[in-house]
Amino acid sequence: MLRSFLALAILAGASLAASAQVFPADPNWKEQDAPPPPALRTSGLIPLDVPGSGLRFGIDPSSVAIGTDRVVRYVVVASSPSGAVNAIYEGLRCSTGEVRVFARHNPDSGWVPAQGSVWQPLHSVPNSRYSLLVARNGACVGEAPNGSAAQIVRDLRSGVDRRFSNY
Image 1 (cartoon, rainbow, N blue to C red):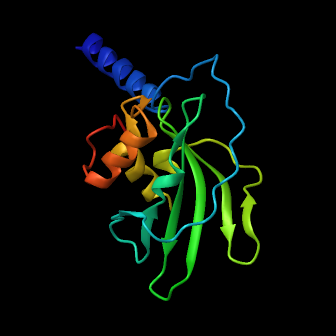
Image 2: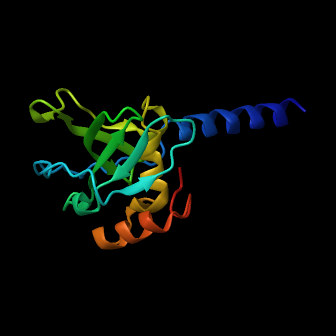
């Protein structure tokens, strides 16, 4: 009886430790410098339905790219009912289930690099439910980018939820 209890406790502890990081990190991975963000577009966006948000979100299809480092980079645009527009240039690292902001768009000065930005788990970044939707709806297939930028755009447009994700 005690042996069974100890075995269950060890398994539970191992399970918690394994869930601390979605996927093991590749020790040889090297991030490339992010290209500069493209000019801001507010038309022709692929809509994202973010439940519980008063904002309208969309992905600029022309901004979707996969780098040689296998990071999926794109611009997401958020619009409020009053007409205010914010945009973020960010990347998804499908292999680790992480997101990173590279730049934010300021209406007065254009794109501003995000200072001190680091890779963060998709599930723990406040106010980035849209990033998780992008990953699940077409950017990632399990631990890898979804083929090509064109394929990602096609799948984001199709609105298939959770078809591609392990997280």
